[in-house]
Image (cartoon, rainbow, N blue to C red):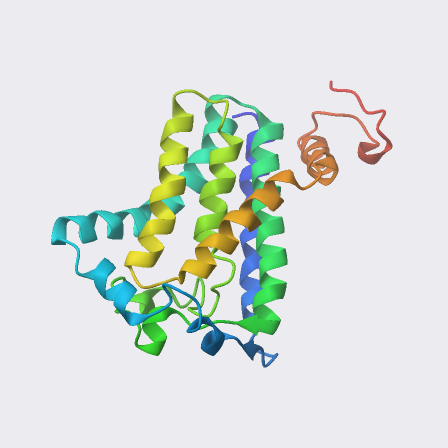
Length: 234
């Protein structure tokens, strides 16, 4: 196997540890709870969620599958596509760094400002059995919705990859809807998630390229110095 792939398989999980570290760090700080302010916003009420959660059983199950598996699939599949199939290492690195930056900035927000999930305040039912996910996330990580942000982010990265772009844009629509139906997010979370995902995608890619070059250097693919801008591939 190409050493560039091996290096990335070793390094990529570190990005997720960034998220885990921020999650547990936020336990130390007592954040400001904005939940009560949401009740003044249209569609942030029990009637809205009752309508969503009384949809026909097949519809509910479809969106439950989308929520539980679709999100992970587009992230792992998106990075894996560029890493293993297209072997576009820069592109896979750019997606990974975008995700890491998204975790970093959102983690800072969640540390100081939280919003309880609709199911936590009795506005909706928990259709996911959320207690199984406690080690990965917390139900107060609401604004922005990273499910929404990352589904849009991946869709934007795949916008020129036909016909896969249709799949990713479809997921960018279905996943946010699933977060609402499952009682996990408020409509405000989804809207801010769309904005957040777009801003992360438009974030300058200078850092991304430097990190990609550093990974190539670790794989022995380019000569030092990585950060001088004069390195050449072997």
